[in-house]
Length: 257
Image (cartoon, rainbow, N blue to C red):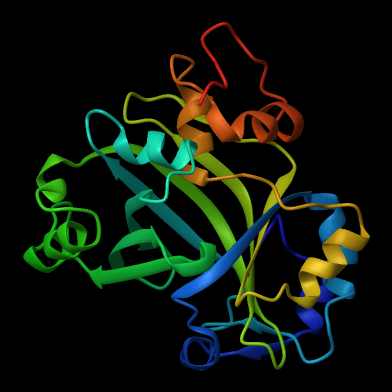
């Protein structure tokens, strides 16, 4: 727990995974993302509402995640997301490195800007019939057979359950982007804090606003792929890559939509 070995976190009561899922599954939700220095997390956690609980499994409060994003050869997912198209989508496999399990997850846009997530368990590298069927039903017939891995992300995550609001907060540290071609990038000293709520912002959103942090346009997939491949346009992630991750703009790193 090198990046989140913090006293305020140790003071929070635990919540079991089953209780977290029951109280705040939020498969249809509004996500707000913030880029926060790791050095600011202690003070933020010390101020969370009384009754906030932290996900704990077998004594662990931080868990390793690895996600591999799948896209078409034309990068339809990347470009549709970067242009904020109504029909944008993401497909990824997610591995829970500490607790086990592998899932195929599909994210699409729901009503009023909400994110709709659907998922099925998978084994191995290929898509099961159930997984392929989920992709085709959510995105479009024939999409599943066109997908290929284009980016892997790895990070450690701590999950908070806020009291009385069915709202979750995830804190991701040591985020690393890895290309199938072998390149990688880890932004130093930064955490991605994400609130997952209904339409009403959470108490943690308000804490972040009070401290000068505002939601940013950050997709781990879109921003990571643009950061690693200078031939791709940065699209709506241009500001966060330049301002928060301090990645210089090149002639190839266009922000055109």
